[in-house]
Image (cartoon, rainbow, N blue to C red; front, side, top):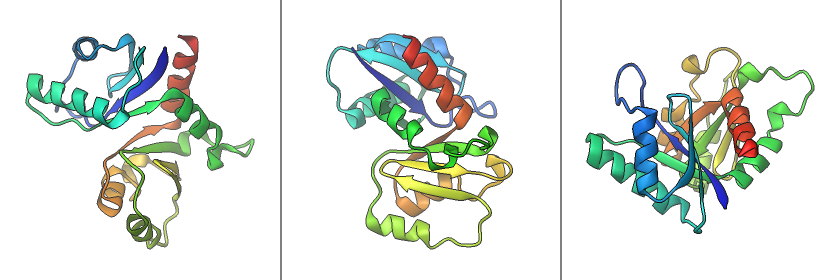
Length: 182
């Protein structure tokens, strides 16, 4: 069995795009996923599958299933857990012994950004917050609150022209723990 994580953006936020986790699990079962487990209401779905999947196509299937049932768009990004484990292990901001977990976040990108997109992002200067882009991931070190940073999903989507969704490092760590317990 191969383990994956589906990450949904913008559900159950401020009373908009409500989606119960039990209903989400049913939709995932209809896609043929197994060992489905959700984590918190923000749209984190751990699952296994026997078949090899195309991550982009499988994400699109879940997006379409949500659109058909609930009549709203929800961006979905799927990553293999083996890749997520490597990304977590390589976090440059978590290398020091005294890092503050509350400052760390990981932005998941729908695809690897173009050189042009990366150039646009690297033009930004004068921020107190830090970031590093590696393939389809953006490591973030946010000094204050993620909700106040300019380095949010909208920023990366606009500059890189790819979809993005972010999780705090505590959530990333918990998802890895849950996957390893399965």
